[in-house]
Amino acid sequence: MPGKLLVFEGVEGCGKSTQLQILHAALLKHDSLQQLQRRSLISQVLATREPGGTELGLGLRQLLLGDRGGASMASRAELLLYAADRAQHVEEVIKPALAEGCWVLCDRFIDSTVAYQGYGRGLDLGLIDQLNQVATGGLVPDLTLWLRLDAEVGLARTRQRGAADRMEQANLAFHQRVQGGFEALAQQHPDRVVAIDAVGSVEAVAAEIFAVVEGYLQQWYAPSLTA
Ligand code: TMP
Image 1: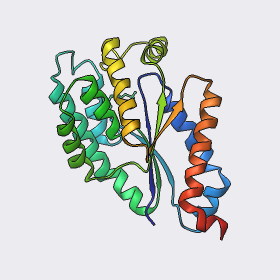
Image 2 (image 1 turned 45 degrees about the vertical axis):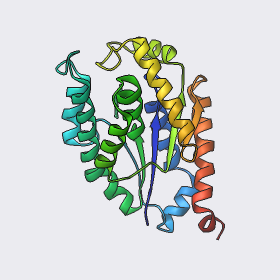
Image 3 (image 1 turned 180 degrees about the horizontal axis):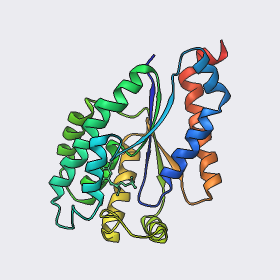
């Protein structure tokens, strides 16, 4: 009973963490999903995130986003810390959950490294693919919900939330390159990356996400749902 990996991606302030929580709550009371759980075709629905989905990852998240990392953190050190977080997360949380038949909702995954460290920092994309491969053992999301929002609008939203973390402090040009990275990824992987217009209200975006996920659920489990 292998599960499914659903990932939320996007620039700062795109609303993915809020939307992940809303989808999580909606799935827990979703008829079709409950039906599949009763038939033991899906186990639990689990919410997790990167960086910081494990004990080790929480420490790495502090280093990556807190003040101790400092503006002087080398891009390759940053890349390796994100990869270390992912390796631990996949080993300890994601793979066992998928093996058990869970749906795993993950706030950021491999595409964030391509967008931020590849397009944003300018590190070699081939190297990043190799590191992602090492960290995940080749695991790719079944579905990536990319919340598409202008980088400037997103950054303005995060500034309203209060103090910016180390990544948010990077300049607008960096975040625009990151956004370009997500655009490129969506073009390269139309099989798994779905763009969601993140400009509208929280409710409107949540409805669009739910409709997309519902479509995939029907597609993945069609024989069992109609039986
Ligand atoms: P968030 O959890 O609030 O989205 O913060 C995570 C930050 O880390 C965000 O700025 C994106 C960044 N990040 C990378 O730069 N590379 C990565 O591989 C991941 C997972 C996150």
